[in-house]
Image 1: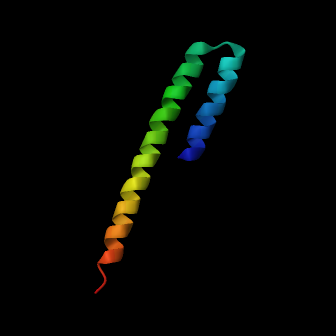
Image 2: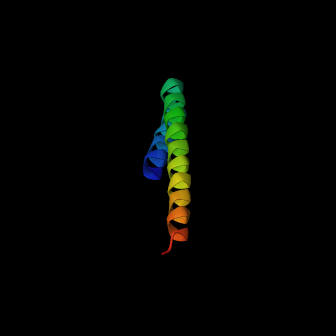
Image 3: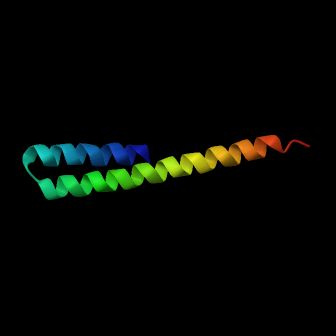
Length: 57
């Protein structure tokens, strides 16, 4: 997922340099959304991993 974030950031930078403000803004917003989804999924995965590690029988 972080690869997608980097891709959209590169697209935004190139679009911004070439003067396509709308495309740059949209790419930045998509990158933000994907980044926060990745962070939330990471945190959920970390919490589940810690919870499973404590249940040793």
